[in-house]
Image (cartoon, rainbow, N blue to C red; front, side):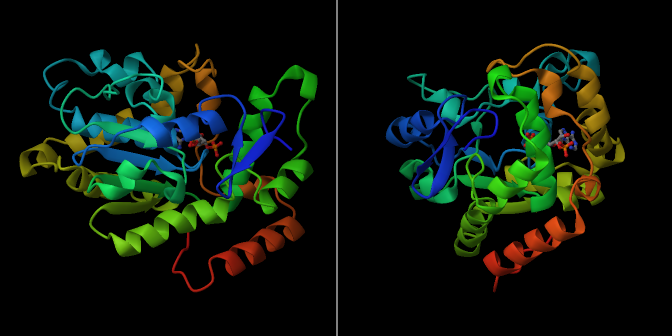
Amino acid sequence: KGWHTKNLYLYQGHWYPSKYLFSIANVMGSQETFQANPTDIYLATLPKSGTTWMKALMFAIVNRTKYKNNSLSTHMLLLSNPHDCLPFIENEILRTNPTSVVENCPRIFATHTPYTSLPQSIIDCSCRIVYMCRNPKDVLVSLFHFANKLRDDSLGPITFEEAFKMFCEGVTPSGPYWDHVKGYYKARLEHPTRILYLTYENMSADTANNVKHLAEFLGYPFTKEEEAAGIVEEVVKMCSFENLREVNKHGNIRAGIPKPAFFREGKVGDWNNHLSDEMSQILDQITKEKFHGLDISF
Ligand code: A3P
């Protein structure tokens, strides 16, 4: 079974491809070698939950003073892709001493690894984690399109019916979807000050207020003067879907994935254009059962 690669493999209850950044080997390797620092911050997401957007926002927030006196056109986000600004730990295992591209303390990394499979040093130390999740139907639709952009020609395109079936069975990169969300959600209940739990839907509905909240959590709160000067709105605008899509019209990121592949619709509810009523009801039912007793909604 597979999405953009032929096969996914089950490891510690979650599915991983054999190649690309989030390969089973890289996840195992990061468990063995990655050393977290207490001052680190991690962005954790399931693929297609808004990782690129959050990377951009976190990078823009912590670096905003660095770029203050330059014109926006020199901002690193506008010269490269958010994935080149803020690395995944699964990619960093190849380096002996990973340092985040963000020069100032704290180091900021991203990961798609489920909470229960994170390198032990991340679990044990008091570092902070931002978890961003998205409603399962939009994740499915986004993953379906992304997989077809990346699929080897020899495999042919995946149909939406096939994608739907695999998603419902929990067979998605770093999935099952519901276990990934539950893992971080429950960890947040245990460590409420260490883990910030965000949803793509909330972020879309009120980006500015969420950005302020995120900045506080990261330890880079906006001052009253900055707010009055419109810096929050500037960050929101710079990281907007339209802006990032325009900047990333051409080229590939380090992993060889075309930059435009990360920017498709950028909307809440595009699943309405893909799922039949029956599919929608099946996913609702699975989600209800899997999230039973938990206050998780989108
Ligand atoms: P769609 O395929 O629904 O458009 P990830 O970054 O985790 O791979 O997620 C990709 C999804 O986030 C895609 O969703 C993409 O369009 C959307 N996205 C990327 N940048 C965004 C931004 N700045 N604002 C909102 N959504 C964004």
